[in-house]
Image (tube, rainbow, N blue to C red; front, side, top):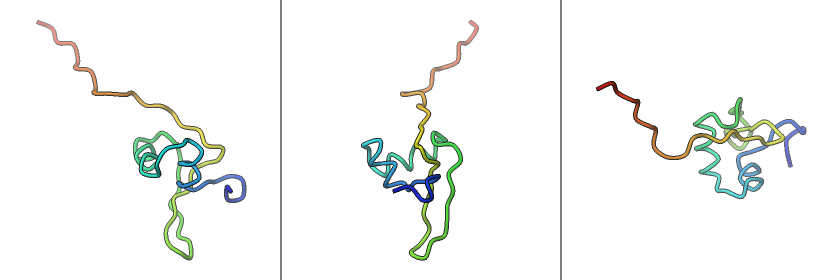
Length: 70
């Protein structure tokens, strides 16, 4: 359940998108979830993701090589 209706955990996002939590961390690193927060809780540090969960899809595959003039 999202914290105060505004933030969700990595595990909640993983369940929502039906992927692993490692995939969520990778998406966070790429900036797909926008402004995430690392919060110090009594049991340790927890990443919080804005709720409702919205993910920007990045480009798949290898980057294209820039066109060179010959």
